[in-house]
Image 1 (cartoon, rainbow, N blue to C red):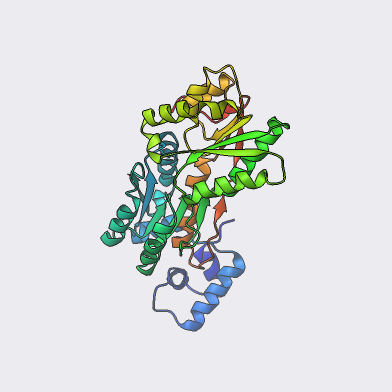
Image 2: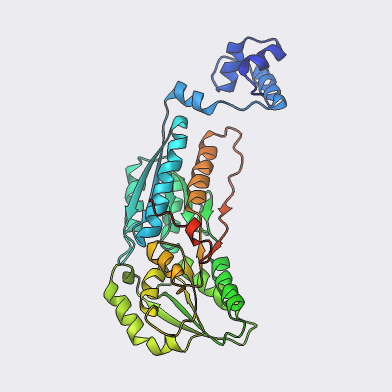
Length: 348
């Protein structure tokens, strides 16, 4: 049963108008009455009708999501899910703008975040960080200006951000190592393909992956690519051709970045098929599963990232009791040929 202002008024022998003034933090009520009303509201389990409150005040909360452009298959999906989730919060006055900013081959994210802080248009900024350190000072600057900052997908842990929603990338890398060992108990030579840039996400994946094999007699080699490979197919061609012998000596390959779909295009022509673990899913990855080129992919849930981010923002701005906002780690999910169809929606 939903507790109303009238129920509280009846319990206290006050007028509904007086109770309404207290619940909506309006003046004209004595301190003693305010305390009585709030105590009774807590006792009865009163929760304010936040949609009605917005209709009464028409006060919007403007939120900027700052997302990368590449790899587009992942960020397009998250963009879509944020837009869908935002529609559920429009009745509460949350107004969402999504900005896609290039982070490769050059990172324009820092300059863009600085510009929206300076514009002072938004009450909250949600950042999918390309790298962490360059954003720490900006987040502090925004928070000092009473602009609430959240992080999504990739955290900036040493900042004053309010909460993070996304993956634990150390766990993701560790899981990739565990999967390789489960699929090939006799694995001796493992190859990790990763970005050269030591971003927070890439370092954590690399550390988790290598930590898994610390106690095992396994040799780990690394092949590095520039982040421009996301948009430069020729760079991938060169990478694969120049390192073909290294690939052919590997029992297993871990593609730590977002290039799984491009890497398997080369391996498809080889008679030798190593264990291959990567991240995410799109149409080429889905087809590679059907052709049994990929062993497993570690996926995140964009729906959870979008919905939990907006839920935490809503709670931050609407919870008058200022309940602490905690981070939410989205669990990694293992995709194989048998369940890939549930992760790839061809209709989108």
